[in-house]
Image (cartoon, rainbow, N blue to C red):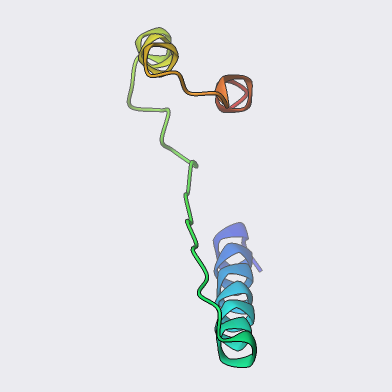
Length: 66
């Protein structure tokens, strides 16, 4: 199975888990799925990092590692 198929399978399994959680517990789930695969290929990295610093983004080291 290629990576994108594995990712889709993981996402579908997670959606199932979240749905079951809502049904069983009556609680809402907030979910964000972000695919960073090619997000940084189309921007100037140094300008992007400067903008993130300006907005006070705290996950900077994690984002820079991409």
